[in-house]
Length: 112
Image 1 (cartoon, helix red, strand yellow):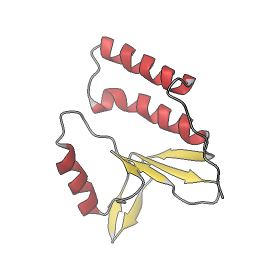
Image 2: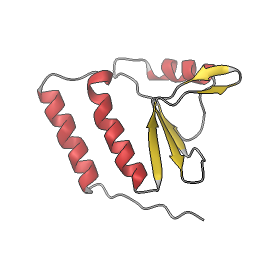
Image 3: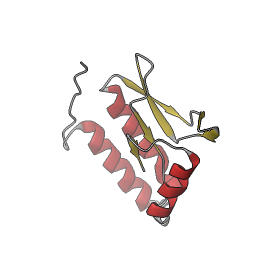
């Protein structure tokens, strides 16, 4: 059984993420493409603590359709413990999630 390490809200990884967001927003960066990299780094760093690797833009197929989550976690045994799909704050999140699920994106262990 895999033991998952918990990362506390005061962990340096999270502090760096929030500092980066504050700096980006102070520069006028507010949309998905501006802020996406900061979240990708956060996911990669926290995934590493679990023994996972975050692979950006990994293509695959589901139900005969091509899918390409913004990030896919892969563990050392080759399993995929989670996925990430970035969305803009101006997007209607429910609509965007439905579109992705209709395309065959995984319905479990995914963060939007």
